[in-house]
Amino acid sequence: MSMLEAAPINAVMRTLADPTRRAVFERIVLSDEITVAELTRGSGVTQGAVSQHLKSLKQAGLVAERPEGRKVYYRAEPQGLAPLVDWMGDYAVFWRDRLANLRTLLQEIDP
Amino acid sequence: MSDAATVADIRDIVVDDVFPNAPEVIWKTLTTPELMGRWLMTPTGFEPVKGNRFTYQTTPAGQWDGVIHCEVLEVIPNQRLAYTWYAGHETNVGYGSRLETVVTWTITKVDDGVRVRLVHSGFRTPKNDHAFKGMSEGWVKVVQTVGEGTESERPR
Image 1 (cartoon, each protein chain N blue to C red):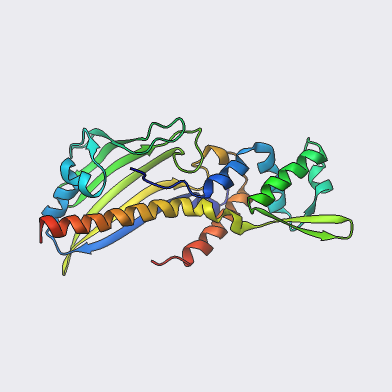
Image 2 (tube, rainbow over the protein chains, first blue to last red; image 1 turned 180 degrees about the vertical axis):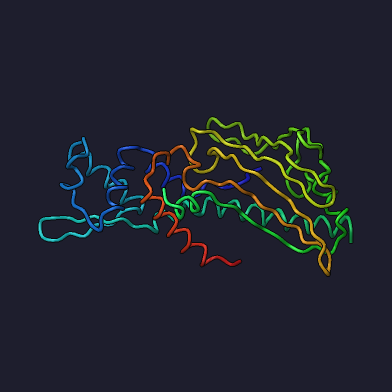
């Protein structure tokens, strides 16, 4: 039996499983808006690498961008983390389903 | 870490419902392997005795064999049954990730039958997952905010 379906949460978790990418995301979360150059400073990786991580974060719906002049500002999209919360929601659904099964069983064995 | 962040870190699932049956009947469905298999999952090696170890077999994921390891923590016939629910593997993310949780069933008499309450406790969000070890407090606060938003949209 399949207890819980693999939800989009896997995409979010896979995206954040990389420690460098996670560090980039944390810095974005802690700033209102931040540029690639600012993110690169003190990160220990190249601007190209930071850009790649930003691309993954954008694809996972965790980060949004706002171009202004020659600069691009990045900000965190907290709703991108919703699947994380849904993971527990899956378990809640699992138990609610089981209790519904229990009701059906009780109607059968103890009407 | 602040208190608020700690609270957000560990969460419980609570589901309850009222049934028109006697507590003894409910207890039988919670503790008889053949009946458990008909609404939950068939346990292997289960006995309603404190210290008893048993397993449930579910779908494997990655390095996790799909076995849920349980140990009976508390047995009060017709009232309360608690057991650990250990599952998953550290290398998994999402489904099949490491879980060290406790499942508690409580049966209470009410006017029109009995209330059956399940508490599945000890979920760590997000630190239960290998992928999230070392997350900063700021990040936990974001998860907490998202959690509040999502839950308010759910039917209770």
